[in-house]
Length: 353
Image 1 (cartoon, rainbow, N blue to C red):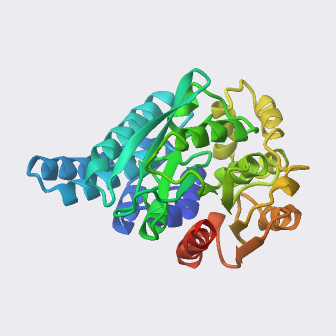
Image 2 (image 1 turned 90 degrees about the horizontal axis):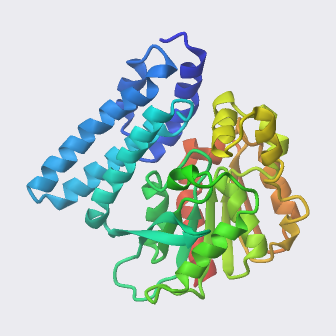
């Protein structure tokens, strides 16, 4: 067992999330026990990702498309977890990030249902996303999905599938400070603006029902989704998973890696500047503008965002609320995903009709 406290904390707190979102448990154990220091994290996970990528590319060459999609999707997730909180080493992080994009892009045509990369106009550039439509439905409702501080569109297959299985399309995108957009755009509190661009794009798609749009967000996205919903009335229902009510109030208690990643993705030179930006990520005086139905989830044992934030959001919104606090759950209750993933997708299906 490593004596590196950062590595020990990573192993203790991230295992449930990794496995719930597509990492093989044996791989998690093999990779994490092979390291002596957190400095080895990105390289170790990239090496295991390359193994899955090699298997996927071999299957693709043999036209074994189902296997290719499965393995390349998994490789993308592994490359993502190599890079996801490694922002302090930009060269390693960016190399792994490029590989995660490449692998999921290769996988998309062979997933069931297949996916399509989309580029959404935003402030003179683009926001990248992945659109997946359920088979056999001409104009399905669509769930717009906002990722968190350290998640990307390459991690979300496990989040997408419950909606797709229930006849809902999914459009996961990366906004300011996230994924591909982190290089061009800093984290911003007024996330309703990028969401407006995404929904404008949805309205251009004749293969989606733009009258039935849901909003979903995970972790920091669990702030972004209700924030956007408070302003964007084209959203008919919202799911908020483990998001802060006020990021500035939560900032000092966040793990050090998370605060440093927030600083870098805020394009700030100092932690103090980052804290000031965190203060702009707030639902103070705004949550009451949410009038559509909302489903709120968090774990009581969340060490990142206290469950009290979810409870406050539930109290302050004006629309119908379903609040699920998983008493033995960690951040987003990833260790008890079976308690809320299918159930929240059922709920969204009922709201969108």
